[in-house]
Image (cartoon, rainbow, N blue to C red; front, side, top):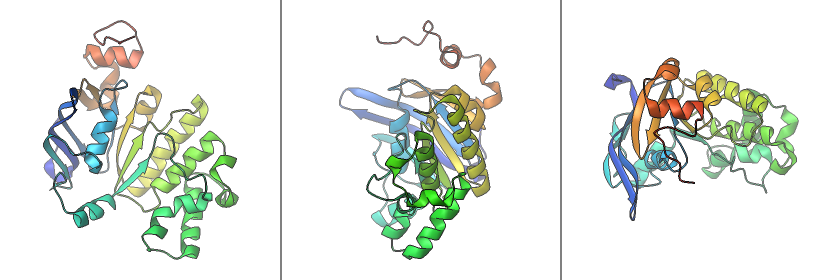
Amino acid sequence: MTNDNKQTKISLSGVYKSFGNNHVLNGIDLSVNKGKSLVVIGGSGSGKSVMLKTVLGLIKPDKGVIKVDGQEVNNISNKEQDNLMRKFGMLFQGGALFDSLLVWENIAFALMQKGKMSKSDAYDLAIEKLRAVGLKSDVATRYPAELSGGMQKRVSLARAIAEDPEIIFFDEPTTGLDPIMADVINDLIVKCTKDLGATTLTITHDMASAKKIADNVAMIFEGKIIWHDSVDKIENSGNEYVDQFINGRATGPIEMQL
């Protein structure tokens, strides 16, 4: 697929990353247009999480160019890195909520840490974001351990959108949820990101989630993007690797190391 450069929010070109003899990324070429939702699918160990971390600057690639809004992010100053991070929101796979903090403190944590907001204003914002993910205000004064898995995931989503980010990353957003709650979370992801006009990049192996939240889908295999197209073409991708993966077949070109 081709992208109009004026519309490209995130781009990776020829990105490589190895850890010793483990070659994780082997020339990733990928782009996400502004306001669009890209879902990257692939098996465990295929390089999905490492790819995300290179965009965030948490891992430095060995080779290649990564750009956000046309700016290279590989070698930038600490100040530029701070400015870049303000564009991002993140929903982590396990939620990553602080057990010792109340729900509202979790949601507004970054804002209070940066001194951007008073405690009362932070509380009000947390209530607003809780409502955006379908939770009542009384949840704000509870601890994460007092919530169900689905409610914790909603709180994590509220935290991800707390600063109205331009870009949101979702790391396996439906992991650990039953099918009904997973669908609720998928609907909330679609709603919240559209309300913000955010660009989203999601990594998952949950095909129901991918089909619901994606505009486009890319598949990563052995550290390379082997297919990238609109979500409505995934059932007839013409790619035997994609076909095996989305149908969950044990036999095919993807050899599982058992």
